[in-house]
Image (cartoon, rainbow, N blue to C red):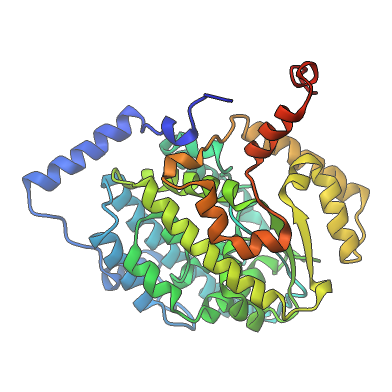
Length: 408
C-alpha cells in the first residue's frame, strides 16, 4: 500500500501568503470590520472602469447579491479570499459589458449557429480580433501563473493555463448562476438558492458566449465538458435541443474522493477554515442526486445521442477512447486530429507530473456509504469498488512471483 502523503496533506500556503492573510486577520481584530461588498457598488465600479453601461438582456442582480451575502456571512474568507472575490466579480462584470458592446458593434455574432454541440458529462474531476490575441493570452497566462503560485498543490489536481482546455461552466459565470462559486467558496445559502433556480438563462448566456467565441473563428464542432451539466438537463436541452453527449463512468468511490480533494484544495486558497468532512458530504449529496436526475432525463433521449466511455478506458488508451466516440457518432477522425491529440496528451502529462493522491478516509466517509448513495447508478453501469481496491484485490489473486514482478 502506498503510504505517501495525500495532496490535501500537502496544503500549506507559502510564507508570503500566510503573512498576508495573518495581517488581514489582525486588522479584523483591531478595527471595525470592513464594509461588505455590495452588488450595486461593484456594478457601478465595473461601469466606471470600462466606460460602458449596458449589461445586455437578463437579470443577474439577485444572484450576485445572494452570492456576496453568502460569502460575507458564511465563507470565512481570508484577506486573499476577499480580494479575489472582489477582483473576480469586477472582471466578470466587465467582461459582460464588453461582450454586450461587441454584440452591438458586430451584429453577426448573434447569427452564429451552434450545431449539435457535444457535452461530455459524468461524475467529477470577447468577439476578439486576431491582432490582440497574443496580448489576451499573455494577460490570461499572468493570471494563471499567479493562481498556480498561490495554490501550488492545485496543479497536481487540475491543470490551469491560458491555452489549456477548461470546463465550459465558466461561460455561465456572467449570470452569477454557476456552481463554480460553490466550488471556490463555502456558500451554503447561495447553494440552496441556486439549486432551486431555472437555469435556462445561464444556458442562454452559455450559447451567447459560444457565438462570441465562434465569430471570426469558424467552429465545425463544439466539444464542451462539465459534470454539472447533468444537474440541469431540461435547461440545457431547451437551449441546445440537438445536443449530443458522452457520459464517462468511474466508480463513485474514486470520484467522490477526488472531487472532495479538489474542492478542499481550491477553497483553502480563499479561506483558512475549510472542513474536508463538510466538503465531502456536500459532494456526495449533490452528485448522487444529480446522477439520479440525469439518468431519468437520459432515458428520455434517443440512444444514438449519448455514448458511454469508461474512465479506465480513457486513462489506458485515450486516443482509442476518442476513436470509439467518433465511430459512435459516425464522425471522421483525421490523422491530423490524432497527432494534435498526441501532442495534447504529452503536454498534459508534463503539466501534471506530480500525482494527485487522495484517500476517502480523510473525508469521514466509507466506500460503502458512497456506494449506497449511488446504488442505482452503480448497479446500472456495474461500478463498485475503487480502482485501488480492485488493483489490490487483483494483486492478492496473483501468484507470489508474478505479484512481485513490476509491470511496464
